[in-house]
Amino acid sequence: MSAGVDPGEYRRVAGRFATGITVVTAVLDGTAHAMTVNAFTSVSLDPLLVLFCPEKIARFHDVVTGAGAWAVSVLGEEAEETSRWFATRGREIDGRLNGRPSHPGPRTGAPILDEAIAALECRTHAVHDGGDHSIVVGEVLGVSSPDPDGSPLLYYDGSYHRVHPR
Ligand SMILES: Cc1cc2nc3c(=O)[nH]c(=O)nc-3n(C[C@H](O)[C@H](O)[C@H](O)COP(=O)(O)O)c2cc1C
Image (cartoon, rainbow, N blue to C red; front, side, top):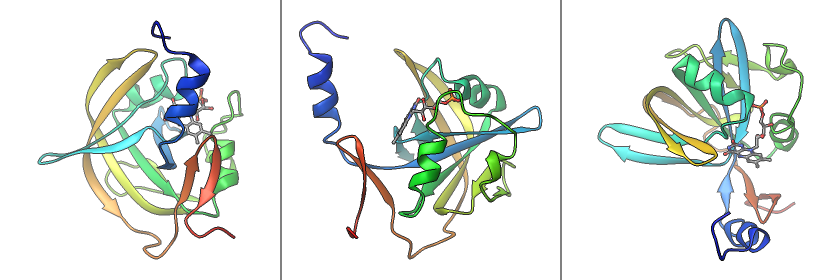
């Protein structure tokens, strides 16, 4: 942690930035992998680039850098359990996303979750060092809106939220 910044205070402050939640997927050696990610953002319109930041010690880190292509499923408000599962360290990797319904993205073959309200397929454009994370920049090869009217699942202040509270 940088000198002069308290780690707990940092987490509190950074957590005030509300985000959506995605599950990023990739297929390596015929096995599908997935990880919950909120460090995702669009970057460039020309060329079309997005980025996400996997932690270097995450198993998914080497999977996605090895695969070279990946898909981003933007989670809808009903997908909290899915977000929790793909954020569980040490979870079993059965190669089939543990029964979560999905279909292969047409451009990359990386699975797109049926629970996604929006999805992007990417080819890795660059991988930059980002401290204990990498910054993986992807060229967008395809987009889809499986549920254009669906509401997103949000993450704010360390917990899950919805645009329209229940
Ligand atoms: C809401 C939420 C967002 C997350 N976003 C990220 C992220 O952007 N990058 C990351 O490396 N880990 C993120 N995580 C943690 C990973 O999902 C978690 O470490 C994962 O279990 C690593 O799995 P693996 O080691 O099997 O790949 C997030 C967790 C949650 C709950």
